[in-house]
Length: 134
Image (cartoon, rainbow, N blue to C red; front, side):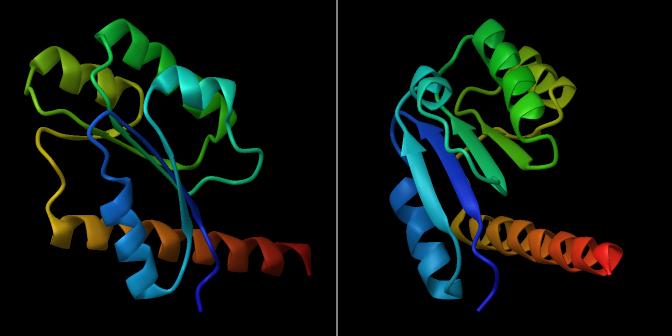
């Protein structure tokens, strides 16, 4: 079994059940879901986070502030912004905040690849960290 990874999902019409199924298939990790960004900020988990998926309908200003907060809180986690309404402003806000940007719902095969990649990356970091301590 791989090391468990925490995946945070912020969404109105939630991707969390699908992500949980993906994690069950690869036997690793857990999902914490929030309906709104404000809920995440007020009730953030205390441990390491491997992946954050923002799929809410925040304004660009709120999204920009959220991305800055996420980077301060979990600097090396992967952040993906999923936006149903494609706009250059939304994409630029995401990319400036260090996030990947997807202009539509994440396809099942892409979601599986993303989760596997993030968890593999987390395992590699853990191995490197343990080697550096020795």
